[in-house]
Amino acid sequence: MKKNTLTRDNIWLKEPEDHDFPAAQDYLELLFEPDLAHEIVEKLIKATTITKKSKDILRASRLVLLPETNIHVKENLKKVGKNKKMSPILLVRGHKELIIADGYHRLCSSYYLTEDLEVPCRLV
Image 1 (spheres, rainbow, N blue to C red):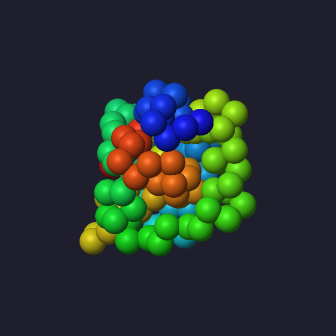
Image 2: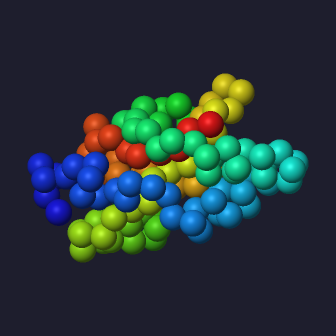
Image 3: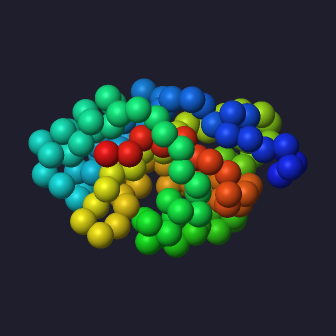
């Protein structure tokens, strides 16, 4: 897909997929006690999907941009090239940084497509 034809609606699903939430919980349990991780995921499930720019999410998370050669980034870029949509990402406000609970590879993929594209996400 050419960069000038990219829109939020043609590369992103409108809502997260069911399997994104258990993946987020697995990750969050590395940072928080399991009960708190579960509470956060319940809030993510109930949250409204909003949009933010990929460059801003990446900056707020303080994570490095994964290389285009990363296997998961490449797979997501191929997926978009085949007109398949990616799932929105799940975000948690941390103490001084944004936590990407699920969707880090998708975020990096979207950044390579265009850093200014609005990314659907759930933020709690």
